[in-house]
Length: 338
Image 1 (cartoon, rainbow, N blue to C red):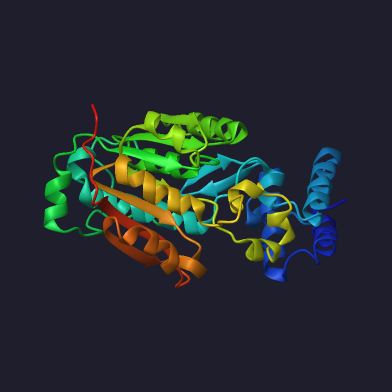
Image 2 (cartoon, helix red, strand yellow):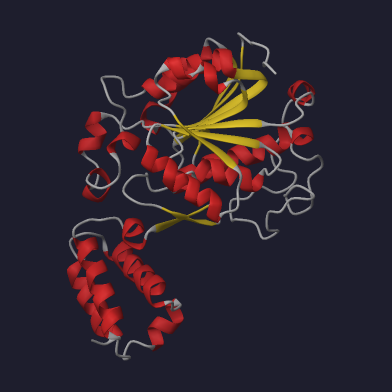
């Protein structure tokens, strides 16, 4: 089989699974990664014969894709915020919206907590002395991005080292991206799935990031005391409703972990309610929370925090949907315990 004949085969095989543009992108990505060729090289090699091994692997991959398995699971990785992360059926595939959450958090934290993150910003937008590459991810904030009220800077200037908690870490994408871009921060990540913790730990090792992973069920309030206090909480929790889940594409609802998409029980937003309660005692003075939202219910979710927190800010994503919530310190502050 030539490379060109495989392309024809794959297009026919996947015609019912994707629209034309997405199908062609998936096939191109498959060949790039499995053959180690650039798109330009693929175009000029269409008449080349595939080795038996390459043919078998490509045909097997096309077969899995035709059964609606996500291409990220077929390849075993997903690209996220300039990193290549391992993914499998135990973790949610990182989305562009979550990259926006991470980008917003990094931008805000660099502006508001500069004294706890190694001091003055360099001209490239990174911390001076940082091990992060000077080549920025497309979303990476510039040095002067983001503003913050002077009084918030004053309170945060007293924080000597930033403690960050990622709730429901999955693949570890949020925690690792934060640690990689804010290397002076102490990052802890929580998940109830041992399989997810294993994937996240491997990703942190591959990215050479020191993140503390804990397997605990956040919804069980008996686990909260042992966690301590944090300056920052970040989460992309399960937020899909039962009605929304039933309408999702088969390659999402039939393959990605249900518990990462939809909360069990009758309350689809229980994670937000629990985080609002957790933050009252465990968010340090001057601290903040960054959450990815179900955009169809953004204002309802934001209202859960408005009574007990100083400030709530809804931010739209690149599609114009209310996707990110930023919450500033609890009005019921408890001093951080040493």
